[in-house]
Length: 625
Image (cartoon, rainbow, N blue to C red; front, side):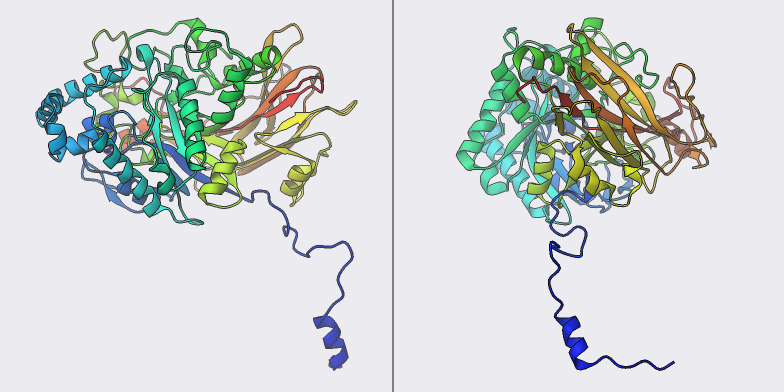
């Protein structure tokens, strides 16, 4: 069949088509500004510039090696093994301790300024005197921090170390490809109770070098840290935030309802804390901090990698009254209660994970776990080592290395992989935590999602235009409306299938009481809820000898869920917990790789998970943040 060629006039009309009324672009995403990609990273990594990392064996892996490793390059660990991530990260913040920053490498290098000080000479000799002497020096440095006392001080050394750290971050920052953040850890622990914060700057070295890190030697009071951050922003025009972690070793202090002086919280305190601490690190090597089985007795998944023996320095045991002030779910509930009292929620935070590794290696996948300290790098019997608190005077409990948790990573929904975009996303709490697997998780709340909305290919666009994402707020419930939540989770493409999606609700009743409930909203297979609303366990599938198959579970789960017990007059929050199918724990991989049978009380397998930031509901009658 012959076709007639287009005339010159027709071609001209096609090349200059008339504008379409009301249409900005044929491209569906043109003109949108919401995040299309999740970025994975670690905001809490220590290198040889941290005194404890260096004293525990990290002698030569500096921030440069940490960034190279996070980018996916191969580095040599201290045990002589080659180390490499299974996949590169998208961003990293080296967060060495502000206290005695860079001191040990400079002592090891024979820094003359330090050696002129008697304490410097003593510590230098201990550093070169073998493991026992090194441990004594480490313990003294820890005691100094706990007692808010600085035995060795030299501003020139501190400035040199900080400048090296900021320069390394700028050197490795590659916008759009790999982002580095300048930061450090504020390591206050009054009485051995962990109140640590990681401090993050959105800026480059030009701004960060205008200050020196605010340390526990400057103050043990978080409010003073927040004042420092405000001063930094006022001085430089830059931006900063702080990220609390490990409330589980704070012995009830991390989310206390009093300030450092023992006074009840005020609305000013609540506003300031919410301003500077938009997210909390809820999972890492020193334990998972979502919830505790005593706090959530009806939650069969509450007892996950739980550390609850005592405080950070093993000098005080744990009591039941401390627990509500240590875990994220309970703190979120307490935040609702404080909102009713103060008009502001001091604990309105999103969730992230990070490693807290002191090896310079952000590696926490179960089959590629390099431990917390360099002394605990892969070896046949590392899991049996007893030594986290070895030698501490007056200790009331001990820890073994097998209790280390191969966790976690931070997931951030940002518009691009840059410092500014990632920082903005963290500030608005559009983040989630993972214990390691790179599960893709979307979570939206709104009033008008249809039952099949999540099945549309443009469900993300619908989520942003008809509702709010994780980290957002629902207010002013329309008359007769109930909040609806749209959630989608996809397995790590290199990982295990998914067992289920749960939505965790917490609420503050009119009588002042606090409540929580966990709902299974999507799950794999043909399981059905029992008469009590509980979903049967998925089982273990084909799991033996540190191997597993994706022969159970689903690659993707999704749901649109309506709160069946919604009360428009009650404050509430909702967040998502996604569970994988069971897979081997790192200790099982150690047994297989080194052909040993370990003396450990830890399980051979676990169910990895992800936690979204919450979406909050506030009644129309309420005001404030």
